[in-house]
Amino acid sequence: MRFGIVEFTSDRGIAPATAAKAAEERGFRSFFVPEHTHIPVKREAAHPLTGSAELPDDRYTRTLDPWVALATAAAVTSRIELSTAVALPTESDCITLAKTIATLDHLSGGRVTLGAGFGWNTDELADHGVPGNKRRTVLREYVEAMRALWTQEEASYSGEFVSFGPSWAWPKPVQQHVPVLIGAGGTEKTFRWIARTGDGWITTPTESDVQASTALLMKYWQEAGRTGTPRVVALDFKPDPERLARWADAGVTDVLYGLPDKSDDEVFAYLDRLASKLAPLGLHD
Image (cartoon, rainbow, N blue to C red; front, side):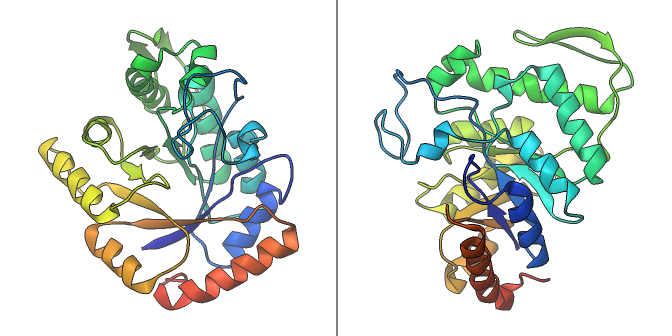
């Protein structure tokens, strides 16, 4: 089991580069950041945690661009995985985003993972021209089209929402396959999507039974004829050795811990405490 950090980035608090460097120095294996381009003031979409238009944290309106944030982190680290939890690819131009991710993977030495979401905020998606009832289809086409650009010498794609003719696009990612993880509720629909298109699952903060949901994902993965096993990234709040052992037995491969929205020194102290608790559980393995 690998342990990582997720930072809810904003224009206040610790900088992503500082946080990623501190996490790497303490043995954490991955660093994740979120994405929201904007939050419409008037909207119909309810937040999953509050069940209403009320936001649980004002950082939703202050989120840094994830790829710029990860680029700054790449410049001051050498080993830690650079990922998103979660990005919203369909809110960007597909061809441009493919270039951004490929460039970051190239410059970081192959350390990028795309953690993507379908998007709970359908009003935000609508401002980008994405129909809420088609968001899974749009994301699938984006992933397929970006993979074509990442792997083919002359890439092309034809879909309902993405279409382009034979094209050249370099750099290619260092990795032969950029992993795509989906952050969404552990439902049959989510797991069928992952089994068809993705490489793994990121749990949501409201996931009630990680073990049962992971078992369901494994079922659909096998039914889809996928080889190996999916990556399962679980969000945790406080290390519990017994729970972590159960998760590992169920197939959880990674566990993420969020950083407090506090000063640099307070974040460093938190990382020190967290690292000391996780060291006996394999943080440095």
